Image 1: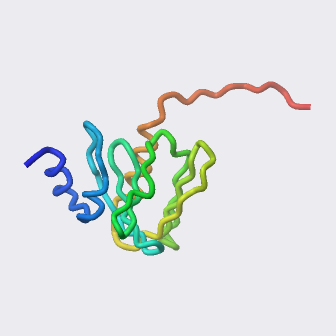
Image 2: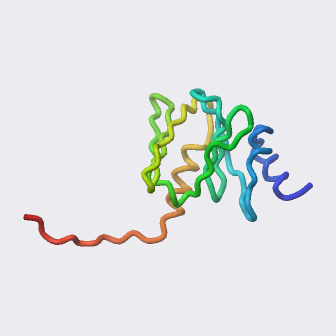
Image 3: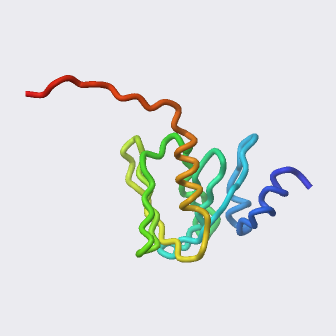
Length: 124
């Protein structure tokens, strides 16, 4: 049994999503959740955030450094992710218990390399 197969089994990614995701070298699938709104499977890896349609098609595969913000609304069980390149934000309804919101936060924090304040001068 290969490393990727063991990693997939460890988090028990649903088979259609696990088969559709072509994880890169050194990439580990960390956690997943079911989106009630679309039926997609949302998967977080150490390198990317994925969405896989119920038919097994990867509809989203974006690296963590492309995430601008992630917002969790506990009352609506909604995770919203916006992107640094102004692509349309994605919104998932994740009612089942999952570690996806926490993983998004941790991975986005881990992708920050440098934060520096730059004074822009006075404004008239």
